[in-house]
Length: 73
Image (cartoon, rainbow, N blue to C red; front, side, top):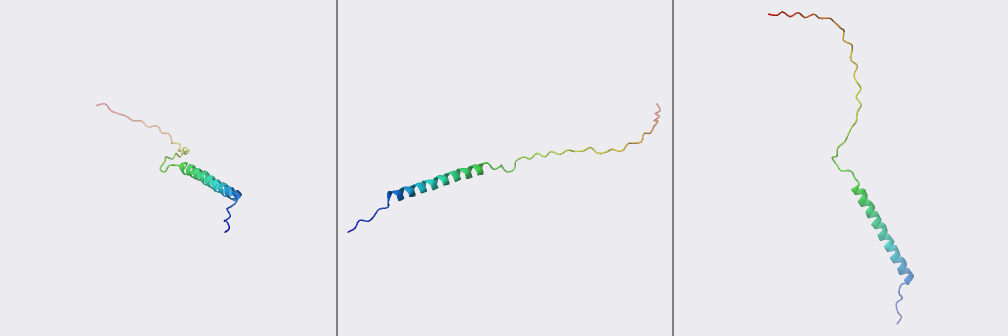
């Protein structure tokens, strides 16, 4: 009876390294996604709007002299 051949040690090492690299990539991607979700601005915050108002032109009022007489009773 022949003995079954086992996978070569080199193949096992390569497979383990690929699995470890895949887990490391998934871990780093998860950290990046978590940081991106945490950095979102909160809803309902305040907003400041700055506007410059220009003064309106007021037409010149014609000047008149008015005399008011009051009688003492």
